[in-house]
Amino acid sequence: MAGAELDLPLAETPTSRVLLWLTAGLVYLAVLAFGVAAVADGQLQDFERQPRIVTIALPPNPEPAAARAEVVEVLELLRRRPGVAYASLIDDDEIDSLVQPWLGSDAAAVDLPAGPSGLGMPLPRLIDIAYNPGVAVDLAALDRDLVAIVPGTTIGDSGLLQRSQERLALLFRSFAVVIGALLVGGVVGVNVWITRLDFRLHGQAVDLLRLMGAKDRYIAQQFEHHALGRTLRGAFLGFAFGLSTIVLVLFLPPLFGGTPLVEPALAPVHWVLLAIVPVATALLAALAARLAAHFGLARSP
Amino acid sequence: MDLRGVGLRYGAGAPVLHDIDLGLEAGGFYFLSGPTGAGKTSLLRLLSLSLPPSSGSLRVFGHDTGSLDRAALASLRQRIGVVFQDFRLLEHLSSFDNVALPLRINGADETETASFVADMLGWLGLADKLETLPTDLSMGQRQMLCIARAVVGKPRLLLADEPTSNIDSRNAERLMNLFIQLHKLGTTVVLATHSEALMQRYPFPVLAMQAGRLRPSRPRPTPTAPDNSVDAGPGPRDTEGD
Image (cartoon, rainbow over all chains, first blue to last red):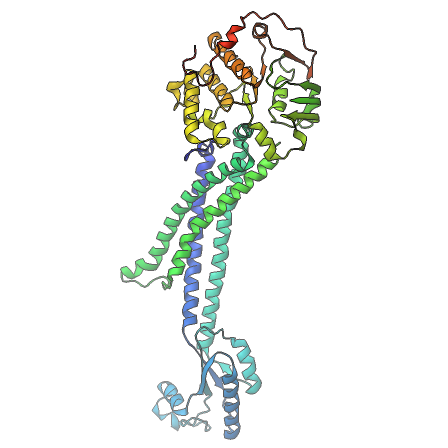
């Protein structure tokens, strides 16, 4: 095996071209899948960097003493929970200012039973909870604990919305990683299939090398080098197209004054991981080809 | 090389070799003869360790091949040169690379390989064909190339299946001289042939096969060629030839 020329005529057969283009197509799709995973991961990291504010609403309680006791108990509970930076009751003036845009400045004249608000309305008591960045907030558990103290307590929509966005990003990331891994696995599978096919196509040449005293390792390396060369070329081709697509989707619309289809939240590590995809794919494919060749050789006399 | 009670069958088919008992002396020269289908090629395949015997024992260079692992068998094969009837040249490789293949497989130094292969091809009259693909060579030249590949590694055992069938008498003579030269250097040569003339011309024992069995050796005919033709044979490094 001298220079780039292999002893076996593996590059001379149509399977070689099939390997190149199938690899290019599968790696293109894999890069897109991992690109989606990277964007989702970027969004998740973005969520984790922001302090999370969750607002809870305790239902109105006409008994001032009982209402105060409830608030104290809830605040104590919240301040004991891990990751809570602070928890504070929103004062009545602030609540008034929140509802005035909807009810108007003469809302006090509305004929409703007196509540905690100066507006004379039975408004809920609101508590803001700030979580430290990166803390995983279990809203379901929080909801259970709060309802146990004050039945009817609700968690503000903004907290739930952020949670659902996080879940969506997590789902996208997991799904895209699985799809990307399956596509890389597809490249490996294609290499195994083509190696087995080549093994049959070039059986006489393989036999010739064996007769000259080539050890299994030597022959298997022929298949490995062929797979590595072809898969690397195909993978870089697919990677180049995949990367171009990602860059177009992330950066082209803003250049023309449009809004980006997704927020480009890719960190340098994401770009590095994407760049690893073709190399890792080719290495895995070469290893698979080598093992497939060894398997084929083990069945020969 | 020693075969005891060796039989061979391909898959579940009928046996093609039966109960072969054969001892080949190290450094001997043997003709292997017999009609088509007698089992010559199958016997050569056994001797080249291409196939294991279906029964009996086969010892090569003092090793019982049945007890060797794949790597050890490969090491033994490195000491065996095979000339195929159908050449089996790798058509995507140049003449040079085809001949260099056994040396490279054996891990020979590339500079030595280059020099040795060039000398060998020069001696065989293919000095100007180093970079030529086998498909661009004549049948005779391909035969020469196949032989060069078989002998370039100075094998201890040379197996040749009808090596003179595709070349003219002048080249056949040169070829026999080469084989005899190798034999004199200590290589065991087994040459399968149909040619009665060839067997009558050289004073070597004949292993006659028929229907998958070895027949008792026949008496040696009187050689028709002068024995000094053996000495005139050029070695691999003799670039002038005849």
